[in-house]
Amino acid sequence: MAKIQDNLSNNKFIWQNNRSKLAESYSAESIKSAGYPAHLKIELTNYCNLECPVCPRQYMKRPVGYMHIDLFRKIILDAKSYLEFIYLHHLGESLFHPQIGKFISIARENGIHAGLSTNATLLDEDKIADILSNGLDFLVVSLDAATEIEYVKHRIGADFSKTFLNVTKLFDLKKKMGSKINIVIQLIQTTHSAKEISLFLQQWKSSAMIKVARDWAGQIKTQNTKHRAIESKPCKMLWSELTILWDGHVVPCANVVDKVNVLGDLNSKSLSEIWNDDPIKELRSRHLSNDLSLIPCCSMCDGHSLNEKTYIEQSQFEARLNNYICNDDSPRSGLS
Image 1 (cartoon, rainbow, N blue to C red):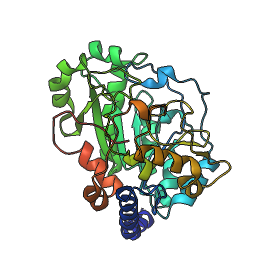
Image 2: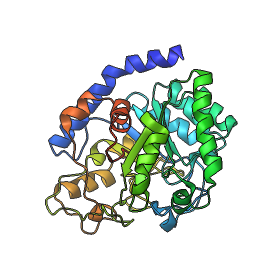
Image 3: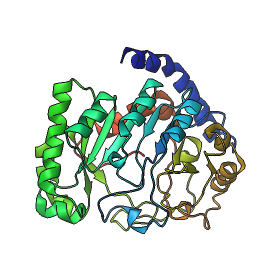
Image 4: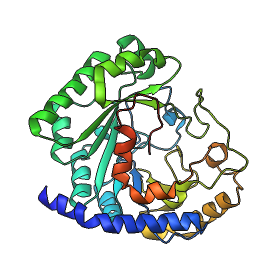
């Protein structure tokens, strides 16, 4: 762990310098980025044991699979000089990957913060010990209800009592093992779950977060669904982060469900090559000219602009802690 802390301290200046370059490229409306992605969302698997109404996985058509550890290692070694934070989750339950602990340890040994989102159905003592002992920094538990009556509507296929007990064990083992992991217990606010917010906050206290339901760029209908504004600013994600599917295909953001807007394949190119290759430069150009009517996902997304000052000042890990763990009971958006 001492080695990990040294790596993280040494990287802080490099990370901020990289974020400055990313922000400058965004502000200058350059289709070639001077920096490299500070954050990656990496899909370890797109298999999931549940069917949830708020998740677009129900519409996914691509094959189910699991990322190979060698591909993950290649990504980390290529990006470790600038990469700050990885989120080991996209459209699947990552705890089904049998090497989840090894994925976490590879990231942490290379000085990169790691986070994960889980439905907690697999959080038995062995899994909990695996992720805690390998140094996971940040865990979001998507519970989404305070009672069994409401839970079964949102987490179809799960057992409320068992999952609730798993989460309780998580906190017990965190204390027993002396882990510094940051845990968030999340409820996505919908018309049905809203009535349980008060009880949910009582149950999980400072660990609770109420999250605004996202519409996944128009792919899921919610009370918050929006259409893209005519004069929307370019999306910051094209200048700051990427999402990597389990088979190594790279897409622009967390709203991509199937293989659309593919920017490259990490089995044949490096991450740094893909970051400023023709496909992403073309997509950046389309965003700058607001020519998105025929672009999947982008055409229905209300976009994400960049607050340059905050982006430069906060590390990617700090940004997530400040968003998720802020002693504020009001509903708020998550961060990919």
